[in-house]
Length: 185
Ligand SMILES: O=C(O)CCC(=O)C(=O)O
Image (tube, rainbow, N blue to C red; front, top):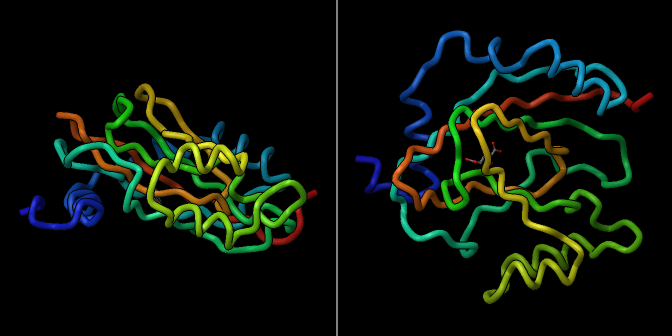
């Protein structure tokens, strides 16, 4: 049934089929919230419930083409940090194994020495060697692959996308969004 859906819809569908009682409490530990508070300069004002990010195996060949780059909060790059999204690896995720991809420094667009947001979006739509084209703008693709237990913390203004799981293993990750109100201290 899943295989009939477009690749990225498969993630939402599969994740919605699985419920893990206690997942949020197990992952959003007091230590993590303390770390988020330190990074944000104030405690989060809201914490969203944790969502599973599961991808079926063998979705096709790994590619940087036709991905779904987006931001979860579109705010001013010069303003205070609006939120941090945590990505948890529940199982080992190999490169090409469907981990979330993020564009390091993309939240700094429109600031000194960085490209404009429209230039970056244009590059993302240009066919060819995306990695090289992004390199020229000083932007790096971070693949959130790694070992079970690894946690990636991302400024929610950063562009990111699901990726194709080309491995024979289910991609098992989860995510939680931490939001901040007002200016940082
Ligand atoms: O499935 C993924 O890895 C992408 C997750 C994502 O884009 C999000 O949680 O905002």
